[in-house]
Image (cartoon, rainbow, N blue to C red):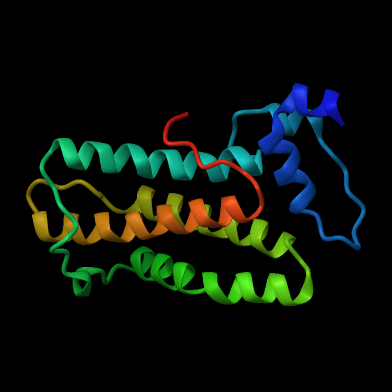
Length: 163
């Protein structure tokens, strides 16, 4: 096990072990675990967190704030999808604990990261010409970032600010 951790890193080992249901056969793909691509689930999840952190740093530098965000401006399909996804988090955690199925949290992380990346590709987050919408979107992605970080922590995986 020590050699595996040295080869791929503790986060990858933990994530790959947790993402497999306890009653399922596990195939550990060493090449996938070390790849820095969207196919690597731990990289994909951590990259979503790091990307949001980067956006928030840029927003701060540009003078945007989220404390006055008008969340009623979030009406685009991808925004609503993200809101629903982060709203599911408490139930996912409760179900995973009740049924002793931590892989549900790993699956949730993947789904949330995918929803964020889909939103990011569809919508402009930082838009100087629409400050109110930008601040609402910043509040949304701040919540997504917090949710991903909390979910990663539950399975013992770090949530890096930069990658």
